[in-house]
Figure 1 (cartoon, one colour):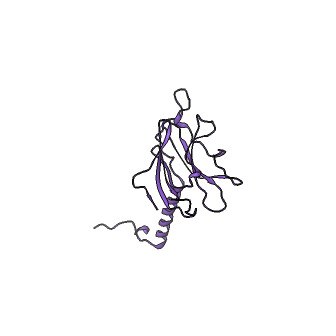
Figure 2: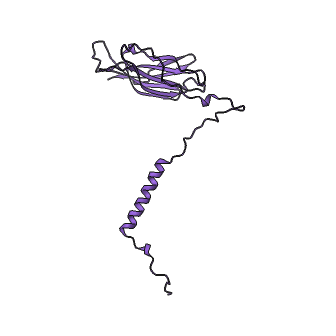
Figure 3: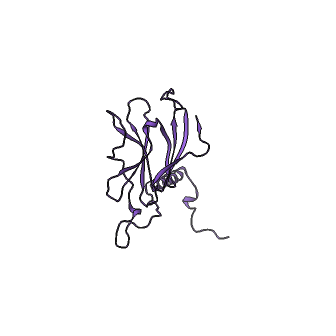
Length: 193
């Protein structure tokens, strides 16, 4: 057997400093990977057409900023509690659905659900539909826009004698664009609390 001409290598015996250096390097890689992320993937085509014209895929959803919602809030302002976007009517331009209520200092103000759109990029957002009227005294939870539909759970009251703090009716609801209007459906299994 031939003896090695090279003495024992220093890295063949681990010491605590080696483990500390390895752990520090791994932590650095993890931290760096959480900062450096790839861009988001999209299935949309390029925003410019053959002559550089804007296509509907490039349209940004309407903003709720500056929109006057049809709520009578008296001395307080209207607050957009939740919002979601999606192409609800299939025209290639996204709509924004907003859950709005008055900024009441006490209690649970009822919600209104509104759909905003705009005709073209740069146009002001405009209100095109009201899905839930604040007069219905409903609170909106589990709100989402998916697969060209708006879904939510509506908390309400079985009678006027039920205190506003304690809704006793829970109804799932879904709205979809059908031709010229949003049509509401209640999924199977709807029930009271």
